[in-house]
Image (cartoon, rainbow, N blue to C red; front, side, top):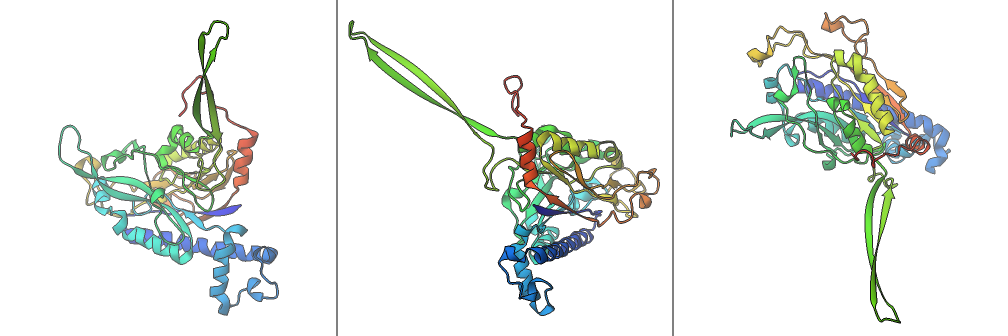
Length: 405
């Protein structure tokens, strides 16, 4: 069993301020993980092959801090330390208009936000999964041959040594066009899935926010067992000794080989589905928990949803707004929060703070519960539970009646 940390922030147009929020949470998670392992050390010193005579492993003196931290890094995972943090969609910024959002986007390789997270990840030895914006040359439509710039709503994975995992990037497939929010105005939809990839808490399946409303992507990433069919043909020729006539008989043997996924952490279906989000208050109140629980139940997987929370860009004038986007005096956008983790049986094992149940939509500054912005949640991820749920209730698809996804 390992632990995961979930960080909840309120992004604005200031990438510097947003980075500061994320780095602070990473530091808190690293400290909490070290504290957790210290407690476990007191009970399980022998698990590391360490001597009880060395007081270093009971109460680490200041002069031995470096050596002690090295021991934590080496043995922390086996003892249940959490060494990964999940941050929300659009952690780099949330703008006040489509034009402003386009002006703020930076390529991954030159983004100061990404670089800052990489530095913090290496400093704290903690992996990070986070949502960002990336500029991209958009495909021209049929009415114009001109190439324009749009955004990709992307999640990236930074390893605990600060390096980007190339296979850990995912671009949001389903764009959110609801009420006065038109994500498609500035964002280009992704075109493919990212295969599940390994992490300290199991294989991760990346999706983002509005993807939550579609069960097909979740089923695709978590489907299993996977199978492939092999066909072997045999031809046998016999001769009738009485007549001398030859008879040829052909037989075909079809074998289906089924694999539920290797024990290798890098192989097999996703064990943890990710939905970093920035849900609106209306949709969050109505659907957030029920959708997250539904995806966990129908896929028999863990679901981790790190969410934006609170009023974004309070008091900031929208100097980039077009006439169609409205005046700068419009109310700030408010995100629902209530980051959540659901286990493979559909139990909510973590719910963080968010918009107050009694909030009437008037004063944005009073929308969320105290402590919601900057909250850090910690949860145990038990892959043994993932296996038990699937073993006790196998979901056998009737692909003879309906098509396999």
